[in-house]
Amino acid sequence: MEKSINITLKIWRQAGPKVKGKFETYKLDNISTDSSFLEMLDVLNEKLIHERKEPIAFDHDCREGICGMCGLYINGHPHGLDGETTTCQLHMRRFNDGDTITIEPWRSTGFPVIKDLIVNRGAFDKIIQAGGYVSVNTGGIPDGNAIPIPRDKAEEAMDAASCIGCGACVAACKNGSAMLFVAAKVSQFALLPQGQVERAARAKAMVSKMDELGFGNCTNTGACEAECPKAISISNIARLNREYLSAKIKD
Image (cartoon, rainbow, N blue to C red; front, side, top):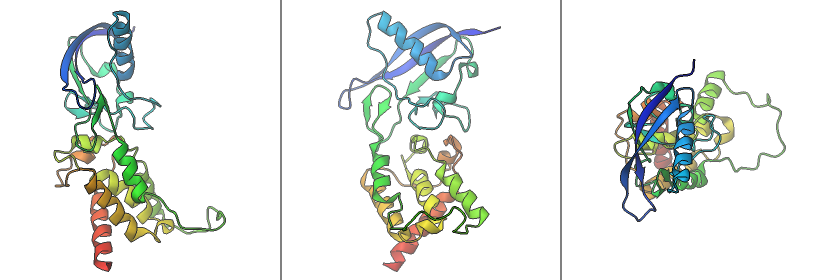
């Protein structure tokens, strides 16, 4: 039998990046515990529209834990309390009848609020543009097995490449650091033969752009790894530090 709950929502409302925001409280009754968190927000917005009120702006796209768009700070945790789960994969069965749920946008200098729960994560795109790619002319497309890659390196590279760029690491960090994101993007190339030509330039360029965009420093608290929906390891941060220092020494 389908179960339903009644909940209270405390949601951050902010009309624009230069407007002072505040929490507003909403009550929802008979929310199915089988519904996802975003479906619950859809129900709330339908209710607000029916009441001729401004609906809540929030980001979403694939709703399959792939795109990284649905970043919300829920009850003090990026994406909510469930580990290795994006907001869109969070279901209302994780909450109890009568619960109060607090929902906020990512809080970071690097992610300015656009409206309500939507932040501008264009900073991540700029970091990728600074060096998160392979641009050398590789000629024709080689056969998939033509370049031998040790299995352990391939696995590590794929683990790093699983980062979806949602920004939970930044939201979780007390310093607002983007080191885990940058480390994952540097690692996925540094571990593979195809990424060696631009290896030194990539590390320097991406770290420099990260600093320029206002992200904080890493102090190794591990909060980023704990809250990452893809369980990206902070061992990648150690690799990034080695890559960066090695590049600077070569200079």
